[in-house]
Length: 585
Image 1 (cartoon, rainbow, N blue to C red):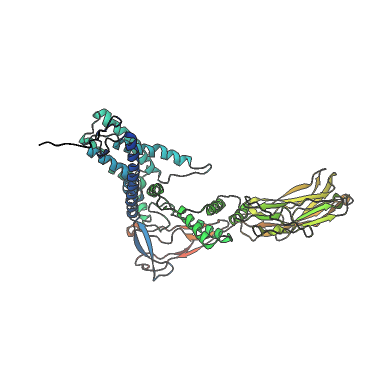
Image 2: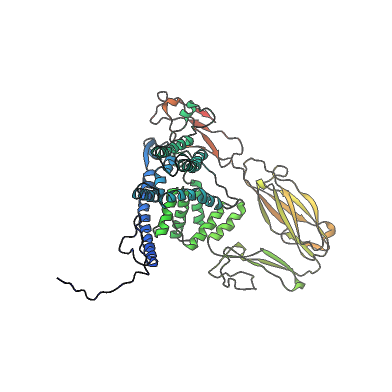
């Protein structure tokens, strides 16, 4: 029997190089393809696997986050409505234990699984990828993440480690892990991990968790713990604080202030305000390492962000509003709030100008505030009434009308106050009034300033002033400081007057302008404060014998105050369950 073969083709494999067998690759059919082609195919396949793992890890980490954030509900009688109950939610998981166990497992699961797959597939011998991934990830967290966290804090901002004892424990084991690996692989048995070494290494994990938990509870405190005092401590906290007794998740006053600021931004729509408040609320909530890991994975995979993303315009508004809370000078707050509206404002730099008739011209300065990146004609000149007429893209302020005084006496110097009224906070302890000169400025002029009591009394609220001053040739402004007495007692806002006058010898070549009396208002900043309980709900063990309830005086502490307190029955009955109390603080 004979077989004939026809149409045979000869293929040269000189340009191809077959690869050896790896853990997964090559699959077989592409083993003899060109190296360049296989590199491209493998890279595309790697990206595909990376996205798949990212999606699975995202689901896994979200599930772990859901578990660790579980809370249990406890009912408490409502102090204001005895027949009703309040529902208080407290976390089931301790934050430190959750971070070191499930959250750490969830965020590092890809590296751990990769190392396990390689070790098992390589007959329990270390490969080139698995151990390096674990050690590399740990080194990156220790060195790069710490460095980035420090470098990202802008000067002069600061950040504080809340659980410093826990930080010391985890930091020690973070460094000791490298030392232990060196001992196992280089000292005890060269490049071999014995079973007992693996068991000890594994047992270090629960040891870290237990020590960190004890450190959080101040178990290693140097002073002796008073167990009776510990019994009296609250074992449950209201929702504003977390399980560790730290600061509440968001500060209510800060959010209320943010809402008030939004209410003053008249050009924002309700939808824009809702987005801004959602961003503020999200930023106020504490974020875990797990959340940032999920967010990074979703960014790479093109998934939905965990945190609100504002459009560029709203982000600029949000940044401006955040500046409002970091400004120490309260007088700058109105200016910042105007910027929130995203509309420039047009105004004169002064409410009054004066000019000598023989000068034939006057320079009137118009000032624009707020966003200045808009180029468009905003003012329509109208010299007949010297009034600014803003276009619709702008809004005018109170300074939209300025008075121009034309004096026909070219030989006189004119003195007057720069403003007819001044205001000062009592704590600033001084107020400065400005006397300005128009007309002839090449001679020495003298003037007097005298204070006159209004509702404020000299010697009690401010220091009496009755002095003579002078302006040198060429000097057009004189600043005079009047001391204000800060008495640390609450009282309503008070006023006094400053009168400008001329000595007899000055009346021949100097005269007074229209503003010869200035009103000074002393704004009271001495607040008596408010009396309130530190917490509205307190829970103590019956074995404690007594409960300590803290009463706070907030938002001011000027003056002496007295507050009355008494106990009232709810579920617990006086004499039977507790001792009745009624007294003054």
